[in-house]
Length: 321
Image (cartoon, rainbow, N blue to C red; front, side, top):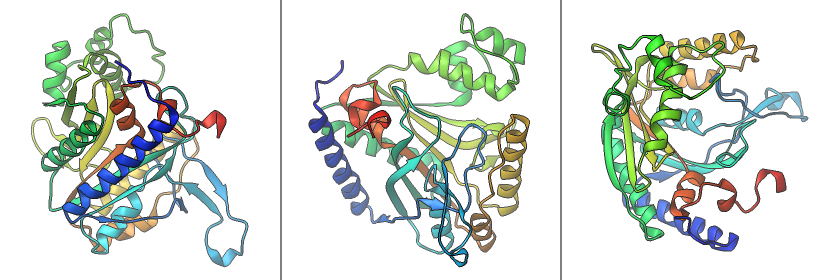
């Protein structure tokens, strides 16, 4: 049920949530940091588009072409390589073309890193934080964890690692979609978002971990049959709230993944994005083994209020900004 909340009440709840987040990490000795919003490099991910702008000052100040960050991840990893240790950032991020009931081009992301942890241990802390946030609004939710394979078998009776592409297409049922250019991972994503995710109970925190290695993003890949990406996603009801990894620390592998991203962007007719050379250099210097997670603050606030419209938790939505 949607909670009755005025815009002022939503602003006050956001302020209380920020105080809770800062207290949560202060108790655990996790440092708050602030990193640049503008960067000389962007996000190469083919499914994310960045805003860009141009610096008009003296050329000695650096590359004039600048990108608004889509997350604080790359800068935070540079801090990890510099020895900062456990830390978090609560700040604004930007994604072009994403506007609607569940998206705003400008939003708030909480991202934190734990040195010496893997993704499994970080799942526990993420559930703790989300549960504490829900309690602020007088809500609670049970947590249930699945591996990616367990979820597909339980929900659709399909093994996502062994099913043929034809079987994946058939499992979409009556869902109609433009199939041109789709690959195996696209079909898996469609099944998750259109067939599985909508069935998650509203009073449950659902955690999905150990994704196909082809969906590794910035996660380590664990050898096995099949190999899996040490990655997790956390859902509150049917809403994705957080995405976490046992972080990749190999510079050569990271560069290769960025280059594959840009190759896919070219295939799709999208412009290439400059690879973050500063991040690669930091990984070459050495980043400690760690786990990290990014959590969408507006999505969490929506769940706290029982809303399915992001405009309910913004001071001003994009159209009125």
